[in-house]
Image (cartoon, rainbow, N blue to C red; front, side, top):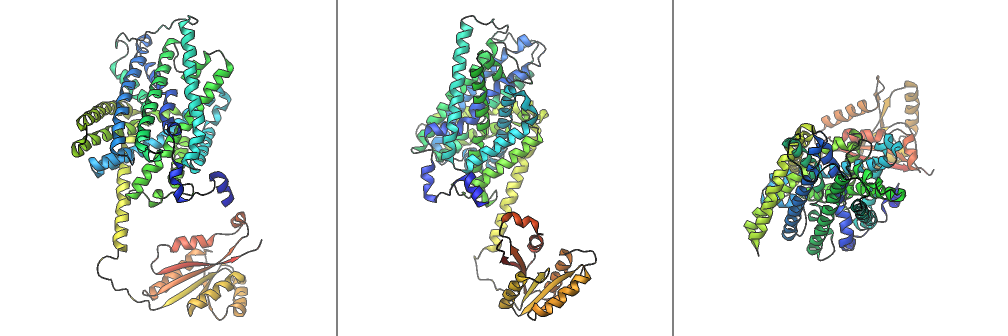
Length: 607
C-alpha cells in the first residue's frame, strides 16, 4: 500500500521546501484561472438556452450580445476590486478573511460556507461540462459519462496530491493550448465571415426591444451567463502560492486572467450570432462553432482543448478549497486535520474530501450540466458582494494612501455584484437554487457546533488554575478475550502478567464440544490465569464480552480495566481480509467507556 501511495503521490518533501513549491505568473495563470477561463465553454450556451424559450426567437437572441457585454463590464469591476483586496490582504484568505475581520464572525462563516459550496459545484459542473465536450465529439461514450467524469476527478485529485508546483507544470500545457486554439479559431472564423463565405446571420446584434421576450427571461439568461465570472476570486485566495513579490505577481496575473476571459467570452458570443448557432442537446456550442472550420484536425483539437480546460477547471477548486478549509480549521470551525499539510506540502485531507464529495455529486446528478447549473454561481456572487462590502469597511477603518478611491471602487463592486446576486437568487431559486439557500445556514450551524466542541474540549483539558485532586486508582484489572489457544494468546498472557496480578481470560461458549477442548488445553497452557466461560445462547461473540466488562467496571468504579486483545498480523496486507475483524469491533464498542483501556498484543506471521 505504501508503494502505491509513493507511485501516485511521489516522495515526501521536507517542510523547508515550501518556498520552492511556489508558482511563477505563467504557471499561476494556469492553476488559478482554469475555472474562470473554462466558463467560456458553457456561459454563452447557458444564455442562449434560456433565450430560446422566448415566444419570438429573432427578438430574443440579439440579447445575448447585450448580456455578454454587461457581464464583461461586471468582470472589469470585479478585477479592479479584487486588486484592492490583494493589496489589503497579502496573506490571502479571500472572502472569509475579509468578512470575518471587517463584518464580524457570522459574515465570515456565511462567506466561507458559500465558498465551500461553490468550490464543490465548480468541480462537478466543470467536469460534467468537460465530459459533455468529449461526448459531443464521440456520441457513443454518452452512456459512460458518469464513469468518465469520476475518472477525471480521480486523476485531478492524484495530481494535486503530488504538490502545487508539479500540478502547475502539468496544467500549463492544456490551459495555453485552449487559449491559443480558441483565439486561432476566432481569427479564422472572422476572416471567413468577413470574406462573405457564409450567409449573413438572420439575427441582429442590437435587440429591438423586449417584445416577445420579456424582462424576466432576459434576467434569467443574465443569471445563467454570470457563471462566466466564477473563479475570479481564486487568485486573491491563493496569494501565498506565488513567487515573490507575491502581491504584484498576483495583481498582474489577475489582469491577465480578466483580459483573456473577456476576449474569449465575447468571441464565443459574437461568432455564435454571426453563424446563427443555437444550443443543441447532443452538441455543445463550441463544438458547433469548431465544425465551421471545415478541418477535421482543427475540430478535434478545439474539442480536446475544450475538454481539457473544462476538466482542469476543477483544479482551481482543488487549490483553493483546501486553503479555505485550512483557515477554517485553524479557527476551529472545521476538523483540525484539514489544517495539516501532507507529504507533498499540500493540504491532502482537503483535496481528498473535495474529490470524494464531487464524485458523489456527479453520481447523484448523472453528470448532467443542466441539472447542476441552477445551483451554480449563487455562492460565489454572495461572496463577491460580502467581500467587497467588507473591503469598504476596511478602507474606512484603516485608511491609507488614496483610500477614498479604493473604498469607492470596492463600493461600486459591492453594489454591482449585489444586484447580480439578487437577480441570480430570484431567478434560480425555484429551479434548484433553494438547495444552496438551505445549505449555507446549515453549514454555518455546523461550523459553530464544531467550534463549540473544540472550546468545550479545551476547557476540560486545560491545566489552568489550581491543580485538581486526582482520585487514586485502587486496582488494575486485566481481561483477555480469547478465541482459542495459540502462540498469540501466550504472548498476550505473558504481557498481561507483567502489568497486573489480577488477570482473567474470557472465552465465549458457542459450541459446547469446542469449549470443553479449550478448557482442557487451558489447564496445560494457561499459566495459572483464570479462564472465564461466558455463555452465548444466541451465538453472539461481542455482547456477552461487553456485558462481562460492564459488570467488572461497575464492581470497582475507581479501578482501571485493561482489555488485552491477542492478534496475529499476516505477512501480506491482502491476507487480512481472510480473517474475522472481531478486534476492530471490540475496540470500537469500548472506545467511549470510562476507565477502560484497550490494547493489542500482536504476533507476526512469517508468510
